Length: 283
Ligand code: G3H
Ligand code: ZN
Image: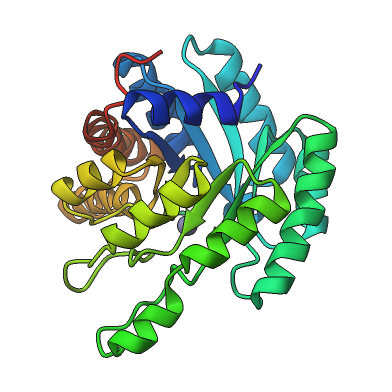
């Protein structure tokens, strides 16, 4: 069976570590994430975006994740990543997901609260825990002015309202990280993070975990982040290995001969993150 989202995050918050949400893009990602979590004795969150769900097929996705969780001796969570609507959330719960993220952050606050609350009410009624988002995480552009930047980041007063009025179990506040590879170094707003932590008390989630310097990750964890999402770094490692092998040998045709090594490449990235997050030897 899948583990409890809230329990896993709360243990991290209490003991000063974060659990990685590693996004699953295909079977090799799942294998790499699971093998590494086992080897490192770490709880793990399998993140499934709507895009990945369409790519893999929702039934295949849940069946694979269930098989993985059954085989595992560490806590495993199957989490919807950036769920966009109540309908998608219901579909995922019905299919067997164990926790949910509803991302209504691009709506005005009142609507974000209303949409998130609708999901929380339905999910909590059947024992499923929910992550919400506040502020704009993606696309922080280099030429954005401070005032504009301020408008895209999560406001502490709004964070309090979102948490209190919806009952979410975890909050992903925009504090300056971004999805994908960074052009320069990200500038995380730690003061904002700390204020939101102090005012809300819920476990916090850091999205866009790829490419953030190690010191910043450690600092974020010390300020209340107990879940960190990583996708792009694994994709880059996987694809670099495939590219290298195909370029080296034009006659290669057996997918296992390049996907196998690419899977090993993901394992190295996941291991690095698990140790950086401090979730090793916690299971
Ligand atoms: O929700 C997914 C994550 O936030 C992934 O971000 O691709 O920048 O690692 P990333
Ligand atoms: Zn994200």
